[in-house]
Length: 105
Image 1 (cartoon, helix red, strand yellow):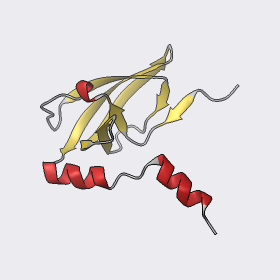
Image 2 (cartoon, rainbow, N blue to C red; image 1 turned 45 degrees about the vertical axis):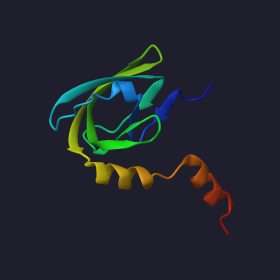
Image 3 (cartoon, rainbow, N blue to C red; image 1 turned 90 degrees about the vertical axis):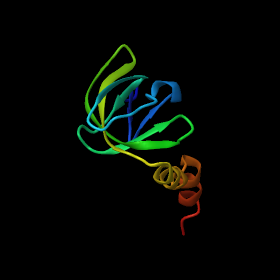
């Protein structure tokens, strides 16, 4: 039996779960399947399931149970279209990382 937690470095939500009009300083809620561990009050990307970046948020609280994570996040930066493109384009996939690590000399 292993540890049933996923350690998360960003908040990734279905696109339809990301509000159309994000506001800095406003609280939003999220629900994710599985038990996930997030850092509290540490800026991280808010992304959709296609890895498109929307801005930086902080998780202020979350609870785990019944194979779900329910929490609250606050936007601390909302990307302009240009910033969102740069951050989205800078994403490094798990496959890219695995490829680099498998070819270490």
